[in-house]
Length: 303
Image (cartoon, rainbow, N blue to C red; front, side):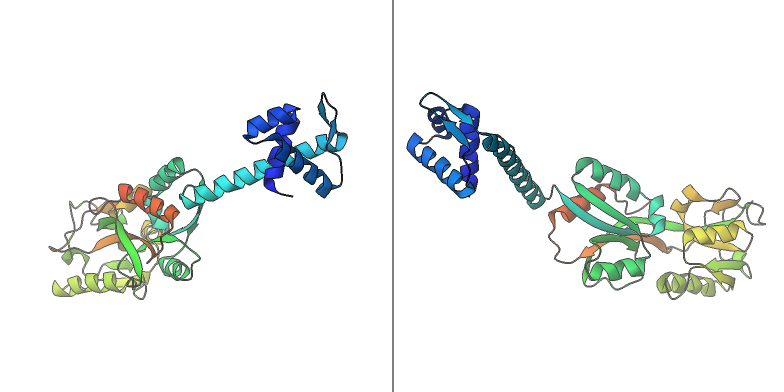
């Protein structure tokens, strides 16, 4: 059985006349009649009752008409889906992101992508930067939003999605809360909550070096990985902490975000969109294109 025979059969069934069906198919009538006869032989059933004046479907022919139409519809639908995949209009993208990216333009970018490309499914997963990069390298993620500057990106492609300054988070009843801004001297012997040194070595080293240069020594009482956790500890009165300015959007009510008097080159919090080098997926290219429109390289957003 051939697909063209199904098309021939449907035409004869709908026209109820071999001559009109042949005209519709832009072919001569004898070859059409031969193909229908061969189809009946292959199936082992009569599909049409033929007389000199009429062509009517048999009971089996009527049932086979449904089968033929469904078969061609399925084939046409599948073919169009393959073409859409080739054009990057359909598919699936697996995207990892660190939790603090929810305080950036990332949710808006995702919403815009889904609106522009509804046939591309997004599988969005909240994953720590190190794990995201590991999954990306073994092709279990297609792209990820991670903390910049804490890993080796040499084998990957990336772009800065957001970059913003660190500010000081402290309880609203803290003795420094009434100041217009705070510098390193004010934090001498102050209890400080920092991110884990092994996870953020560059940020840790830069901040501690700035303290040392100014003769100030904070008392590091605890380490906490996420910005949200550090803000919660600040709210509990455990100490003060440096967090990116964008975290003001999810700051506990009892916590105040204060400008900090950094030196000329302050440490910045960076979000990077990362993907595998050489990945030429059209769906991924479309996602990167949207992310570029929502990216901020400076100002009020970051890590």
